[in-house]
Length: 288
Image 1 (tube, rainbow, N blue to C red):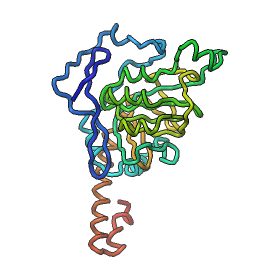
Image 2: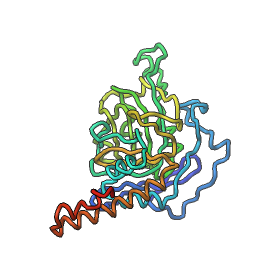
Image 3: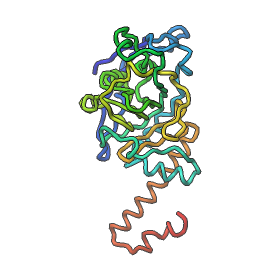
Image 4: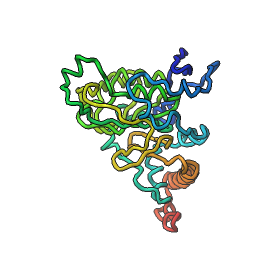
């Protein structure tokens, strides 16, 4: 499989596999890939779309890959995670698919968040003037430049305009980004589907944001429909919606999800055996 290089780091093109009836997007296993630690000078090299001071963190904390694999083993993960959040007292971390609609309904992604915040561009110029000047301040490409295989881009975006489109999706997929969660508009939906790059977004629009928006922050704490998301928090998205797991709670959530799955599997087996309602839900009646 071909590899690409950015900031002196080679990554492989994203692949996906079918697991338990869902399309789980994840980076290819990397072989013979040379990756070096970025020096302070290299790490602070941007592509010119954003002032370096607006990048709040040049890297994010990434979790134990084994924990992410355990989450991927769960069928329909977001409902299970949502239930676990209730039991653990974790609030304001779930957005339903009626709000953040998936462009590829069968897609499931699990990975750490690279965060980005956009705002309306207020420089007193018209769209025509900006288009003629060819100055673009919408800078999700800068987030792609910082991403590593397995990351998920989360955009606190702007309504009515596109915060990310097809060419950007091509770049993100090439870098190994699993998908994007966007509060606001996206476009080129069919392009994204053909590229096998899934979005979960609140709007779809043909109107470009490149002459209307500016990226004001990368890898800061953002808010997505009431959910506070920090860089490195774990994003789980499927056909039911999106969950944001606080990175410091990941192990606790994974263990609770596995326990929940075990209990529910036992109940399903009882149903298929023809057990009575009392037998099926005996544990539930006792608080289990």
